[in-house]
Length: 283
Ligand SMILES: [Zn+2]
Image 1 (cartoon, protein in one colour):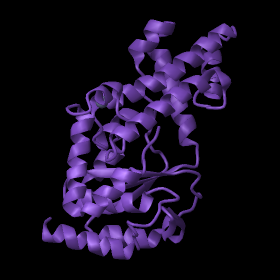
Image 2 (image 1 turned 135 degrees about the vertical axis):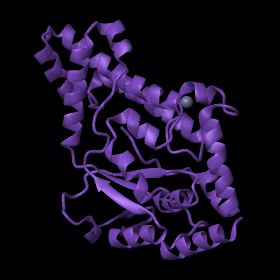
Image 3 (image 1 turned 60 degrees about the vertical axis):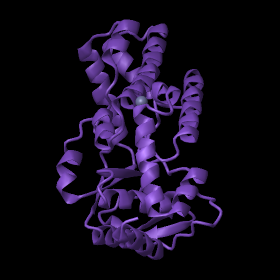
């Protein structure tokens, strides 16, 4: 343990009132945030992100507070603590800036062309931007251009340093959902571009739609397996990463983060090994 790492952890634990030994009821957001901030400060990771679902649409987010594990946190305090580490909090509405699907898979299965796929990507992306979720990015100021230049879910994954194989796996999951929507649209005789777009906008990603529940269940189970296998990463590992739990890109990333937790404090390692990391970006 380097001296600054130990004192940084002690200071953050005090400021955020962390209790590593206490039972976890409402998730590990507080301890996860401290761990991620230490990773940023000590150069293990470049950025991480919270999604705040249904966040109030206010000009000054620092006036509000938010659930933070078993506590609440005043966001002004969070901002001050983050800045005291030489980092910034950047809040945005756009999130991922758009959807990116696997064009080849769509073309093979339902035979629509790139122009039409792009229309679907744009419209589904635009629909999601209209939501009330806010994205809280934590990073060094000089990396802000990377956040501003995000074009969609693939670039979000890259900025968060998720392995390419897992990003592709995630894109393919989204693509399978979309293909289901397009097929259903065709089966309902909605076949013009406008009709297909309208149908997909209405049904894509609505997990209560019966035809998609089976897929969602499959995705949920996969995420659960990934979380059990790799306790220290924030993304869902792809099947290949899970099938090679010693040497895959996710395995290596998991080990790097786990080693860093051990360097900080063995109790911190045990905490995550038992309770897992709070998941940040979804899609
Ligand atoms: Zn992978």
